[in-house]
Image (tube, rainbow, N blue to C red; front, side, top):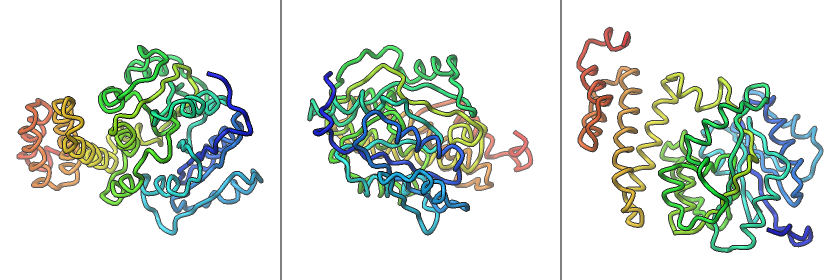
Length: 328
């Protein structure tokens, strides 16, 4: 793929949502500004952090940065949607405030979108780094394998429904460039208004693939995803109840939407199974919050869609005394 003529390179909007993480935010912004692809704007959207990152952003003294700050905390989906809606670029790419891009991230991906108007997304693989920013090669290999990118060859995949919604190989949060006018941003906003949080990037993948557009995959590791104690994935894995409830709700929202889309009929058996998983996760969160009747309703719904030992065990637990439930 030839390089773009700098005078013809389209504007790319880099959206960085942030909340109270100025130490990592500085690295994220620096990695965006340090791209070899220079026709960019960086839209930083702050979700009403207790300590505003505005002084940090002013310190870059770079006119390519725009700073948006919410008057109140809106949550991740509405916060990042504000950035996407404010984007002026032909293409958009989000970068988590605790992640980084390698210098050629945009240079390697944007030309493929320019060359093929049928593509809605260009994406890559990514490293996993630790809190100090060092690459964890074992975790990187495991991550690529888990999300089925280790067997993907460099190619255009069209349509990419299975790739985005079953394999979940397309990481829209930090490892993809997206054609701006291919996305109905109002639907992402509606998801946020409904309470979507944890899986906003998964839903964005749906918005990008549902029309049958294509995706280009670059097998290079052009993004550095930071695994640390305060990112959402780690909080969910540590059974933080708030994130578990949000994760369950987000799953349910996504799969109910997917099951209403006739274009995805071939994938409906998988979505029904995953909807049951989401309702079980949501029910467990409700049970931990002492909302037993609500939890039980989700467990019953989940079992009607997919008989599962985890769900059955959780339903049984909901009939036990609260002291026993809390200990378990």
